Length: 260
Image (cartoon, rainbow, N blue to C red; front, side, top):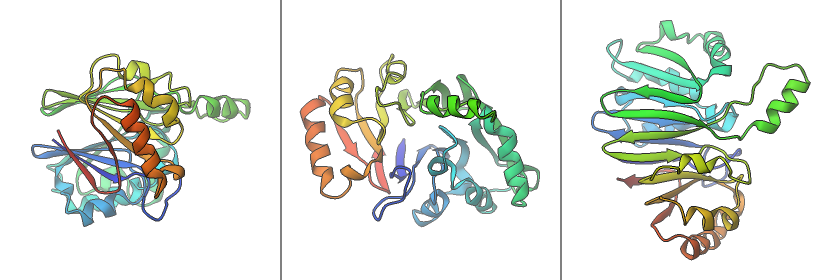
């Protein structure tokens, strides 16, 4: 299994980092978690095979996590044709709007060169094939926004997810964005993880790393990196990781590869 961090920044691009997207490759298949801009361009430059792509799993509908979906949909012209099925998993609340958006861009799923499906995500089992089983847990990231939107009479329900991938006899957890008190992480690590892919913008390392260090996690991959931990600040983040973690860790950059 090879995990490649295509983008590792937070809500804004920075000089060294683009928006969040992570590619998982196993056997002849690949899977994408989030699709921040420019995920498909980075895949092309790294020589990743669009013909291997099975599914995309969106944690939530913020632009830095979904801004690359339109161009990724367009790049499916470099895939294998109708014999290839690709599934975009988006929060259920966004399913109809995503379909309408692609139609507005002259890219409805029915006219894509592959067999493209759109599926809504709710808590629980999400996807399964011969390589992987994927389940979703709430991440709590949009709780405040849901209340604000409800007060305005808008339909957004604040769906945001973490994902657990089970493949090759291993368990990989993706935190998605978290509330600062990281209380939703408890469910994600309730069973041992071979790798925890954890954001590092909305939660603070000095608060979360001591806690994570006591959880059944074999390795930590930090993505969605906040500005203070870019450049020279990365040394301070690395020091905190060494101080609090009894297991290996990686502070990801765009293009970082992790083999499990």
